[in-house]
Length: 172
Image (cartoon, helix red, strand yellow):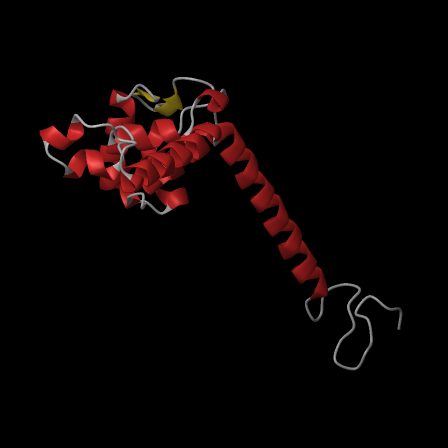
């Protein structure tokens, strides 16, 4: 199963909005810039998210977008459903009405599709914006720590030896 770029962009936008939950609205231009989403496309996604009652928009100089619920109460499944529609096993979209009336578990293929759909839904339901924001912050902390470490180890940095083995902060 493959999620669309539309759902991926929407999830990135929602994480960006969730980062500022309870503090301030986030302007679409800021979301587009930080997440690398073309702004006209982002506006379409935000409209769909607003129609699904996941975000609220505010106009004016202090305007932007906020979540309608706490980050812990919005899951990736909510976001995907808002953009892609409900989770439906493939055979329900492929078979005719006569086949749709039959028991979906009477066929091993249909049984597999139902299991895969239910598993994906369960995983996405458990992945909330709160979890994703915390993971994003953890990644940023590690990245900043790695950048600090690399800067400290760079040639010519205080306390690091130069090509001759002499430390730049050593007394002369």
